[in-house]
Amino acid sequence: MADGYARNYRLPRGLALVASDGAVTQAKSMRRARDLKDAKDRSAAEEIARALVSKTVVMKARAGSEGRLFGSITAADIVDAVSKQTGVTLDKRQIVMGDHIKSVGPHSVGVKLHSDVQFPINLDIVKG
Image 1 (tube, rainbow, N blue to C red):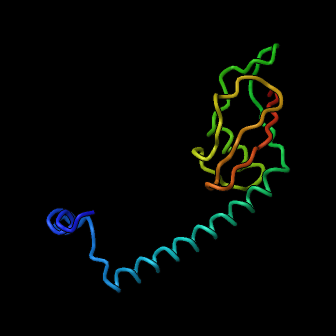
Image 2: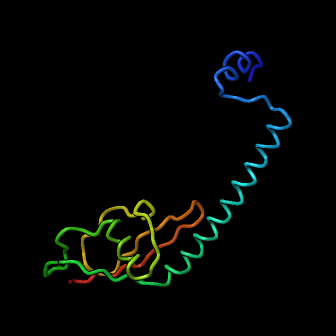
Image 3: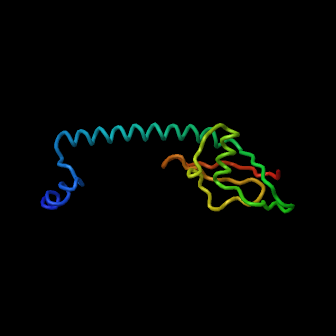
């Protein structure tokens, strides 16, 4: 970036800072704190993943004689079932599914808890 651009545009608008020793030290400190928080979040996500991968969540849904559901199973339904059966609280935005589930039987949906932690949850949809 040219010095004049920084001096005349970026600095007056607060879009940049002068790289003083204090600012550089503060940036390093903030980066270190962010990396520590990221590592803690990743380890917590891996622990949740280990607990959920081996489980099968059973969900009851109304279905016709051919196994087609009256309605569908959504991410919010999956979050509720996982919470009730395992005690693990997820957010529906963490559930990765292409389309809603519309039939009985075994299904697998993805969960993304962290950018590095993705795993499948096994579901068994039964008539109920």
